[in-house]
Every structure is written in C-alpha cells, then in structure tokens.
View 1 (tube, rainbow, N blue to C red):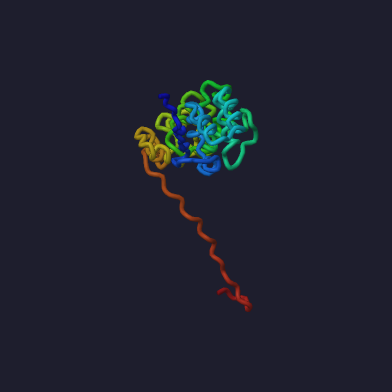
View 2 (cartoon, helix red, strand yellow):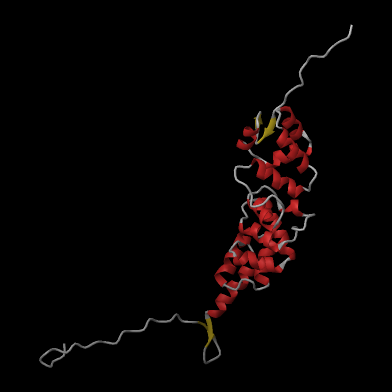
Length: 237
C-alpha cells in the first residue's frame, strides 16, 4: 500500500524587532534592519515571503541577496522602513543617513570606499551618544590630529579618553586656562594641575626693590574724587 503524505508544510513566523510577524504589515510595524538583514542572509526571509505568497517582494529580495552588504541594507530599509532614504543605492548621503539612524556602524564600512571618509567620521562625532561610538572616535583621534581638533571645535571633548585629552593640552590645541584645568581635573592629571597651580602662585609673587620676594598686592579700587557742593549764596557745603 502506497503512503501519501497529505500533511501541509509547517508555516513559521518571521521574528522582527522581538515580535512574530505573520504578514508584511507586521514587518513594517516592527521594523528592525539588523533582524531583516540576518533573515536575508540565512534565507529565512525568502522562505517566509514564499510561504505567505508575496511573489513580487520575493523577487526583489532574491535580487537584493546578490548585491553587496551596503546595497542590501539600503534596499531593505527602503522596502520596509516607515520613512525612506534619499536613494536606493549606496552614496555618501544614504550611508550617512544609515549611520545617523544607527542602522549601521562604522565597522560595517571597513572594507568599503566609505571606511576612511572624513565627512562620515564627522557625522559620527556630531552624534556620539554611546560607549561604542566613543571608542571608535578615540581610535580615530589617536591617529588623526585634524579629527582631534574637530572634536574640540565641536565642544565634544568630554568623549575623549585620557590619552587624547592629554594630547589636547600637550599639543596646545586647547589654550584657555579654565578649560585646561577642567579637562585636567576630570581626568585627574596631577602633573598638569600641579603645573598650573605653580604658575598661578608665581603670578601672585613680585620682587621688591631690595630683591626680596613678596606677594603681589591686590589692586585697590580707585577712590572717587570728593565732590564739594556749592550753595547758591556762594558758600560751600
């Protein structure tokens, strides 16, 4: 007797943004580029689209899977994100948009033409808000003096590590004494703090006519000249 398998194929949901998605609308609602990219790479996305009968989207996904990583992420974003990027292909603007939206990291750009782009690096510096970004920015600044200057010009020096903070002072990028002391105090640079305390003390010392050291006297406020009021009859009050 011949056995006929009448069982239906097992249907599965696509996990996106921590939610189980049964239809494309669910994917858009819970959009997460990292999850979609992983599903594209392991082919679960294509299987899921085939299962729910989304043939048009399936063709697009199969076409995307043959491109490079940046193109894949840009296309996935424009297909399923609530708001689209400015283009469907990699360029300086779309890459910057993905960086700013935290959809990619600078490490993703290592083997691409954008890996050493100064404009993109400055975009990251302008938006530093997590530990990973700080580590990347400090790595750049250790090998790129101009980027270190840019960090200081944007008043983002609080993201700098001890080495780069010291370089700011040693290379005289920062010259404002109040700012130097603020950076030195934050990083507990005992040598720099001691140096500036000593220079402050020296400024308050003077050598008198006998060659002896004495403290500089604080400036006295100028006295107002005495005003004499003349009365109408000629006498003075």
